[in-house]
Image (cartoon, rainbow, N blue to C red; front, side):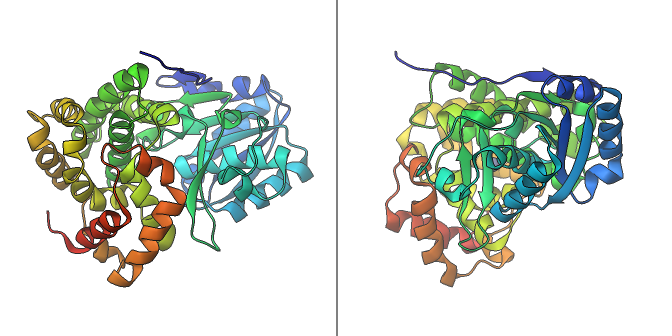
Length: 380
Ligand SMILES: [Zn+2]
C-alpha cells in the first residue's frame, strides 16, 4: 500500500459555532471582504450578524453580494478588484457553495491577478491566496473542506474548478443551525450532491484508504439523513449528520477527485445553468448502470451504505431515494436537446478529462455521447 494524504483543513463544527466568526477572522486580518449571494444571507440575518461579529472583534468589512448560482469567472474579477480597492486582507465567505467557491477564487485572484483560466486549466500555478473564512449555509458542496472553487466562464460555458491548497479555507465554521432555514427544494438537491461527492470519490481509481473510510461513511450519512430531513425538517440530529456528510464529501473529492458523474454533469449545468444536484440526478442512473462492472466490490459496499444488498441493487436503491426526494427529471425537461449532445460530449472530454480517467469504467467518446442521449428522456 502506498499513498500520500495532504489536506490542510481547519474545521470548527457544531451548533452555535457561527458566533466565532469575528474572533476567528481577527486571527487572519483587519479588513474583511464578505462574499455572499444577493438575498438569502440578508434575509436570514446572517449577513448582519456577521458584520456585527466582525465589528466586535475589531475587524472592519465590505460586503460583496454579487455572487450568483454557478458562479462566474467574471464575478471573481469584480470581487478581486474591490478587494484591492478596499484594502481587504481576509475573505469571509458566507452562504451556499456558490458563495464559498466565489470567496475562495476571489482570495486567489486578488493575490495572483492575470487570467484565472490559466490557473483553472493548469497552465500556471500558485501557492498563494488571501486567507478565507468559510461559513456554509447549505450542506451540499463541501467546499468548506477542500481547495476547489468551481467556476463557469460565461464566454465558453466551461464549468471547471480552480484547484490548489492555497484556497483551502484557513478556517471553516460549520454550524448546522445555519442550514436549518434551507427550503426543501434546495435541501434535496444539495443533499443529493453531498451523497454524489462521496460516491464519486469512493469509486475513484485514485481513492485511498483514508478517503475510502470517509467517503463510505459520508455516503451512508448523506443518504439516510437527507431522506429524514425531507420528511421532517425539524430533525436537528439529521441536520448535524447531513452537514458532516457534506463536509466529508468535500474533503474526499479534494484527494480522490470526482469521477464521471460529476465529469458529465458540469457541462450540463455550464451550458444551461441547471441546479447542479438535479443535473447529477438526471445522469446518475445511466452513468452508474454502465459503471458497476468496473468495480463490483465498491458498488456492493456503497449499496450497503445506502440501504441495499449488493452491487446488483445499487442503482435501484439510488432511484428509490431520488424518487422519495423528488430530485429526478430527465435532461430534456431542463431544455437540453439532442442538438446539445455533441457539445456536451466534447466539453466533458475537455474539462473533465481527469474525472473520466479516474472512473471505474473509462468511457469512450461514443459511450459518453450515448450516456447523454439516454439521459435525455430516460424514465426511471
Ligand atoms: Zn457536486
